[in-house]
Image 1: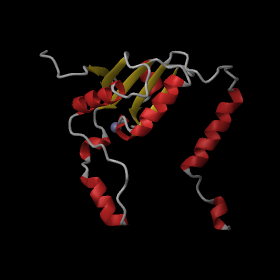
Image 2 (image 1 turned 90 degrees about the horizontal axis):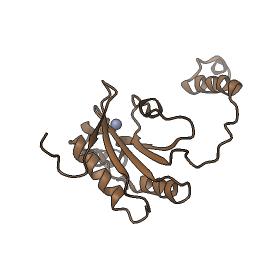
Image 3 (image 1 turned 120 degrees about the horizontal axis):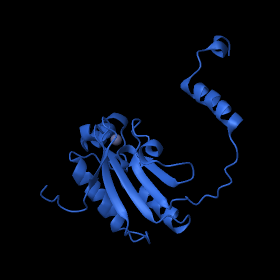
Length: 177
Ligand SMILES: [Zn+2]
């Protein structure tokens, strides 16, 4: 507790400072927890994907549920189940993207982890080689989940990080263009 008191601020320190400025002009939006547009967006955690900007969403509009890859894991299903059953959402939008970090990984990642730390993770890496196919699989996982009462409006997309455009992926085998 000496020189470190004057240490360079960490990134977290800068976030806290930014929050103080944010809170100065923040006014209570007076919303409850139910998303206004009744939609849950499941997306990759990628830093280049600004969901609110890219989809024209405002504060309070939607649930955003994110993980590495935007993969529909059990925990995503858990969040979607709560989103639909407790908080009134009806639609699901799935977003993967070009240049995803998971495209460069394989399930060997798990094995390498096990060799390094002596413990195999209980989770799958869920790496993929084919973006479109992974979006289709994600759509299917949502559409076949018994926990979700609303599975009619489930659509999947690939976001191009270089153009900002979404490309919709059909749920089945791609049609001839
Ligand atoms: Zn990604």
